Image (tube, rainbow, N blue to C red; front, top):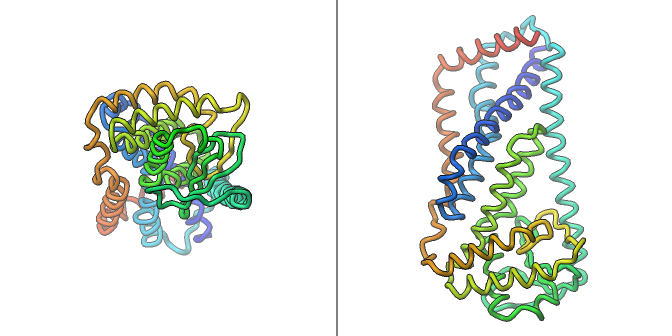
Length: 331
């Protein structure tokens, strides 16, 4: 019973802390939204990503560094406490969330692998000046220009785009995709999807959408930082590509980022206006190295705080008292 009680309490704690911190992160985002809009899109995207992943990160760190050690150190192995139906239900919901997240992540990997295999079989390797990422031209009805893959990204461009865009527009569009590569947006998108699936509850969806929008603007900023002319060429490319999107067409990329997706075509006008504004300003300071290391720094700080807290025996005793109260309420 000791082991079963510990497992159920751990799973329940993960669910409860994750849900609570997700609500807190969503609240912080909504309160700080006006201030965030005044920041560069690159910094805004990093802050939003950090906020979103902080909820499950805090849950994992708190449970692993404080909750579990408190239970192991102070819970008698011969405990007479039993796993109640309420506690078992919470643990089951939490376990289901982890199961769904792992299943969806695996299915997404399989879908991406199948898509890559299909596209590579009918694509032609091309070499574009200044592009180190493996690049392929592809015959496709959708105006694809996208980076596919998380750890071994590849750039795919529809053949009719290579013919329709000018050399300058194509260079600007690729600069946008390079912005996604530099920010590791495919990896971040995968992590956010796992965070959403683990929780099950509809918390953090608005924060996910806000990050996605900020990530697109940040990639536009990355291109605009080259020159004002590049920003204008990217705006021109966006307009051309948006006009090529079929009325009911959409290219499904499990783990990838489009320059313009079917669901994003309504936002092209706003992006074009922003690019025109970027072209009129000095963009050399957009996107700094400190912004890119913000998530790692924040998570490292959380881990350090948790370890420092867990090293205090009085904290573990108080946490165990809290566990006893929670078990008493649920029984």
